[in-house]
Length: 105
Image 1 (cartoon, rainbow, N blue to C red):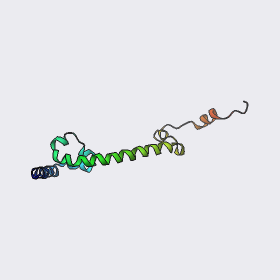
Image 2: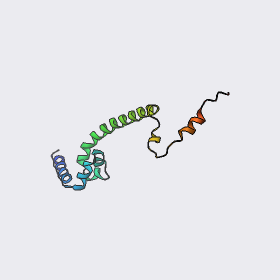
Image 3: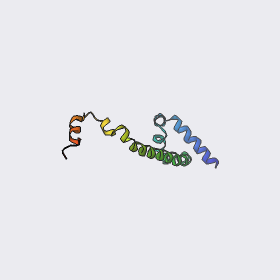
Image 4: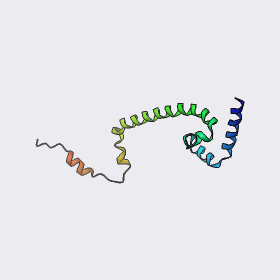
C-alpha cells in the first residue's frame, strides 16, 4: 500500500510538470483522462480516476440523450434546425402556392 502511495505521488509530480497535460486538463476532464496511453503511463492514478469517470459520463450521456429528445419535441415550435443553419432562403410564396387548399375540389 505504501509503495502505491509513493508511485501515485510520483505520477502526480510528473503530470504537474508536463505542459501538454496541463493544456489537455484545461480543455476538460474527458480530454485529459481519456487520452491515448494515459492508462499505461499513469496506472495508479488511472485506477483511482477510472471509478469516477465511469459514473460521471453516464449521467452526462443520460442528460445529453434527454436534451436530444427534448430538442426533437421542440422542433415544431421553432422550425427545423437545418433551416436555421443554412444560407438558403426558402421560396415561401411558392411553398404556400403549392400547399394551398384548392376550393374547386
